[in-house]
Length: 268
Image (spheres, one colour):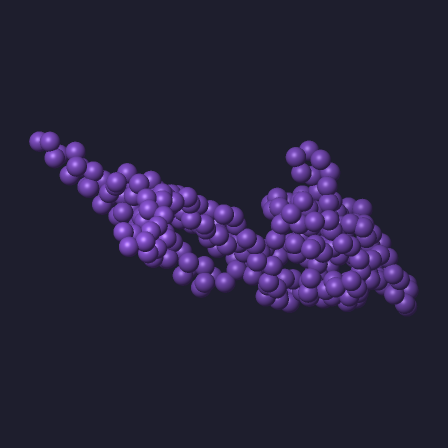
């Protein structure tokens, strides 16, 4: 009956509404350094089997088609895309870009617990103690810590993550720390916790840490940032398709409602 159509179309509107939320978040973060776009995956729901395919007819031959009526759609999950974002060349000595696989590691608080957060945002700066911290709203400290002396007049970060400084009165660079990266078997399983950070989950697997250029980890580029991998044109096209799908489902509800009105008026 039309009641099934009502419920199926309602699930379609709900699913498209969720997709709209995800698209809106992608577009809102089009200029967020290190942001990775997400997409919505759909799956069909259960089916009402009114006639099984292959049932024998009067001549004992299998009927090629059954009668199966679907009950709508559901969101099976949101999937993050970790493709490389565009490069923004900057003048910041502490700006770093990961060319390849890997995440920076920072110290952060999640639900009251101190954890290691992971980020592709390489916008770092120094705090009052000279420690390298992420330029987010918390100033999350880089792990393992790297401290830049107060009298440093030049900072150089090698492709292997080695941090060297030239101090006042010195003629040679001094190594003051090492930037380490982390990678995961399934980075799409990382949980987004805001502030340009992810955290480890059972789905992502444990982190594998090491120096850049080793164990499959990418290289570090100084004076550059990885920008969002959101393609505004693609997102806008998806936005239009989502709007149209939402409208079509709403029209289905209207058609089903009209059919039910006809049924209800049969006795009059």
